[in-house]
Length: 435
Image (cartoon, rainbow, N blue to C red; front, side, top):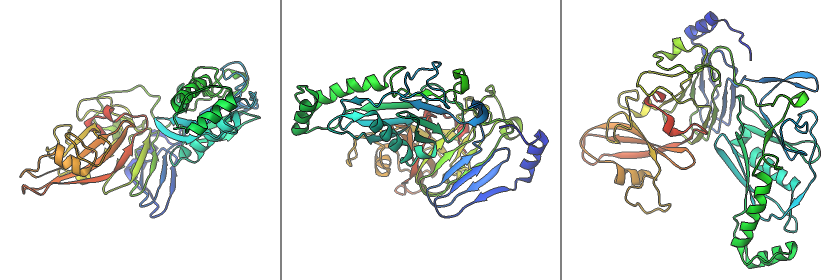
């Protein structure tokens, strides 16, 4: 979107510092439209916050200039770019084919966020329309993906997936996978063999064959469910979405309790990355630098478009750096150290999750407050407060507060909540991504 503020107008807005959104209890949706520094507090409830989200790609649709976020199409006649079947206003459908799949899973992944559902079958066969329904279910009924995408029927047997958020998407941003892994009974394997004319011995061999079949649907360019971008009129321009432009939006967001989805601004994402910035508020006006505040226990949050600091030097920032504010849990009032030692005061530790998957505490595990207290920390007489983040294989950070007083037996570890940074790896963050 184009800028409606002058540079001085945005600076004046920052000086006034009077833009606030307070929603209180309930499941709220907040949308701010950029070019202003909002203080957003949504209180309790499962909230959704779209900070800015004004980026749009202008494309021709039926001869009319239209602002669009990214659009993908599935099950067109060719599923290949540039052949004319993927033109948004004139999609050409494939047939409603049937495939030898039974109790297979549909796995939809967008920005590292995954939703899985079971694909329906009829008489041990799965049709393209049943696959379409599974994709719609995985997206539209998922608590997170439904805030980012919408899946809807296209002409005939096609399926359209549209982004609800801005940002320029690369090839592979949306992934569709079909996985056969259900445990099939002997009766089910017998019924499958009768329906398909096969002779599978057991569940393992039947699933193995189904996974080979699934790869023909999702494996390579041209497969029916290998996502491709829809195209504008003329098939020359892919509809990939766009980042926001204009002046930044240095919002401060406190989402409170509940399971919240926070979509940060993409303003500045198209700018060259500048290292060595010392004051983002005055040197980086054309990029958004947002702060998400955690000051009490929370739920299971998802943050999309979080920008890691690309400058490893402490106190030096890169363009668009965002911040997680854990000052409420640190002695010094700000994050002075990152991975400096779990018993060091005002330190934030980011480490991999270690778990055997059971309730027994084993050596080196950090999958619970009790395990961290017993296996990771030392209860000593030195007072310190810190934050410990154990990141699992799905890039979800399990966030704990550590408080140790001067007594020898007063160490406490408390699970605060979880934060999923989507496709921003926790390991890419520097000390300047924390306050």
